[in-house]
Length: 548
Image (tube, rainbow, N blue to C red; front, side):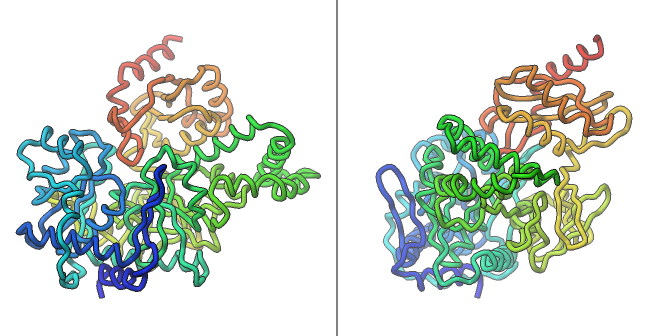
């Protein structure tokens, strides 16, 4: 039985209970397993009437919704290849991706997106609205005929440098990964009889988010979809989830919001919180003081439970975090509140996941061991190499790029890592992000950037530069005072060897964003684009420093 048949079988078992729901200011919309199958059937009937052939590409350009899930499943069930795209991405990038995959069909979420497509790409196949697709009368459909080698999706990478590439994932890739993720969630939930409650806000067009969605359907979980990020803080606790997938940026915002609200409220609660936090931090550094236990015990009794309930509801087993490295301090902070944070690591090319924390043995700062059936090792320059049934079949129409990263059966991730004796991995940085100083020293910027950012809670980003230069400099974004930046550097530099110390900086007040082309669709830095955009400012940093 292929993974789609398994998902449909589980939906039949949940025919009369909610499997997906969307909350909004106008109430809650939900579908049972049976209703989801009928939606899938309508979408399949529409697709069957379009004269499409197995392997044709179907672009899905729409925000998360219940109908997004149904059309996604329908496209795959018809033997077609779904190409999910992120509606917030830069227009030029979206058009380039659509042209690259040569779609036979384009499905879009609303008239604004349809107008965008026709204006930006007049030669495109006429886009269909989801509203129109689901008006199709449902008719009987055959079981999905999928072989492990059949491509089911093309997910475009973020493209931190250069244009995005289409990652082709097969039914075998997806089926194996769903088995791995379901097993880890079994370990987290302890095989309890109650169905999992899951909150989901990350765009389905990202690999790990999509795998999470499919895993939830496979487990007959009840998934609450957030479709309005402005309502995230309100909907998260009201959904009262058992777990949900996160990115580090959200956890940082949650941490900051807690401290701002406590500061505004003041009083005894704030006093206990501050003392307990200092006691916890001393404990992590091995510098416990007399009385620290009393403060943390008091906070665990009077303060932390209220924070947890207001933040994530009363049922949370763990937060799950991926997409980018999570700061150790942030992970420890949530642990202090009694909220475990489990990390995972992977790329689109590895079907979203390579490693996942063992819920019983999570180590702060590490991302867990390789999932079942997946091998990982370090290559030259500590590059992480991976092989297994989760590795993609290749980049769409890019054989040379495919051959460059798939060599001797191993996928070359481009990430640097460390692994301990138990097989637990830590991600150090990206090889292509290495800064090579004029002295020949190779420096991974991410750990230093993270350290500086910890001392600048009001900054948006810290980006190191210095290729070919005599020393490192930093670009700091946000409404920052120069004195605050210098104070942060004065805290960090003494802990670093001389060649890793940051000796100059520039404050850039305009934030980096997806819209201005300086962040990828999932919020990662486009370092090459930043270096090009701020070339004059970077040159000035070094000119002024040398002149002084």
